[in-house]
Image (cartoon, rainbow, N blue to C red):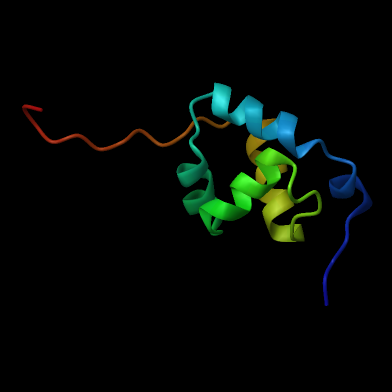
Length: 79
């Protein structure tokens, strides 16, 4: 059963994903963080998908609203 949240249906995913990108998130980081494949993020970003799964939409909405920054990539010493 697919849960459809009317608030999530009205979200402008392209704008939300652009804002997250401007904060430093990559599509791959977002996908890994919320547990989806990168193509799901790409589809939302391009407007090819407008109605994400509830869990995906909720996670993206929360990241956007909280101003979360992407995780800092681990670097090897001396690099």
